[in-house]
Length: 213
Image 1: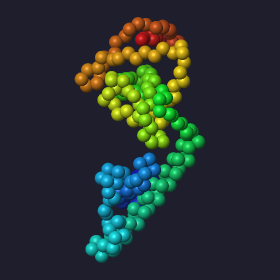
Image 2 (image 1 turned 45 degrees about the vertical axis):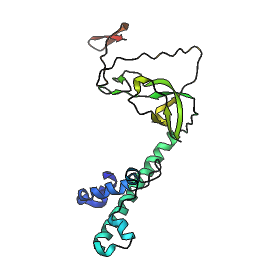
Image 3 (image 1 turned 60 degrees about the vertical axis):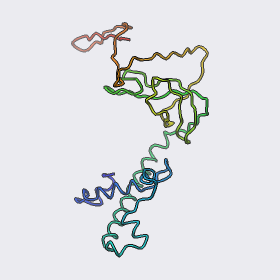
């Protein structure tokens, strides 16, 4: 948001931070079909810009209201231009995915180093877990899943981008091994067995590598 507006306000952009926040929180969002402020508080925001529309301009000072309204309008145009540019780059790689109630899907967890998500930790963990059954279609891009008791502390509504369709296979035997989690939802990893060994040859030395389960 700052990069979109920094050239317009030159060296005084820092004092426009509240207006940038106001413009974003009171702009229509297609995903929730309303501005974020209205979704949070259940009503539209009463601000100098809206007071001007209601005929109370004389109590606030016409010059202040005019300058604020012009700055907010400029910010909204810049943010809209950035959103349109991002949409232009994203749409060619986006595909429409529709699931039905009762379908089974894999859930993308994308674990990162040092961070646990959905019972998975470290970057070498599986990127997907499941499959899980779809219980309900919340919106066109969100679905509610039937998660196991182990993931009862996870909100069960997920964006369609986190889901991958599961194609049933008679030879695919599903197994879900529960983890022994501590009270802070963490667990200790222990090696089970060595699966493979190899040596990586460099110019001046060899590095032994071991694949551990």
